[in-house]
Image (cartoon, rainbow, N blue to C red; front, side, top):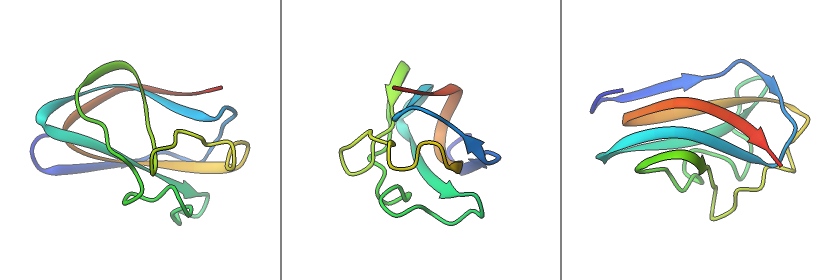
Length: 98
């Protein structure tokens, strides 16, 4: 995504693990924010776009956090969609891990 905001939403994922790891890069002015949605596309409380701390930089293994916490154990095992909101950023891969 260039300087304009871009968004992507995954299909519903059944994941195990308690952290979301991204391989990503942003420009100095760019950023990535992540929102966790339920199967119908409704934001999950505590994991909304405004709760996300945002990612800036170039990381092979960076963890997404919401209000200072990377813990996803409360929603692990439930069908979940992931919404990415990006400005001048690239995401190369994602994975859930323990």
